Length: 107
Image 1: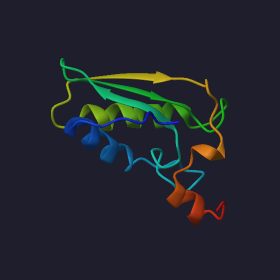
Image 2: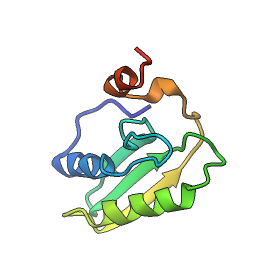
Image 3: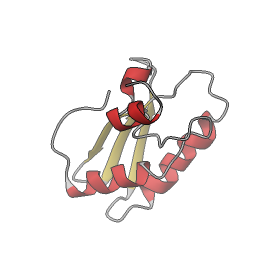
Image 4: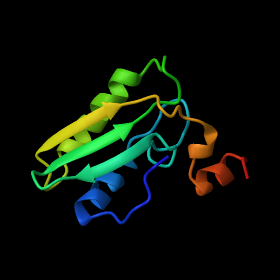
């Protein structure tokens, strides 16, 4: 699950960007889908993103990761993207935002 803390202005911009990237199999953006575990911008203008996928054998994993790298890297004030893929903890439907759970009928 996404870390709970106050985000900086640059981190909020990155989150906005991540909300423009959609999982092609589920009509939900990757942030609200709960695939993003961490967003942190450091003093060197590097954004550190830790994310997962809905399944380790995701057929579009490479494309999705490249889109995250590309779009995050084009965000104003960002010079480098440090993207880590993890499956610990594995994604599950509890990661969905409440709004998405409602839209998909999980609530």
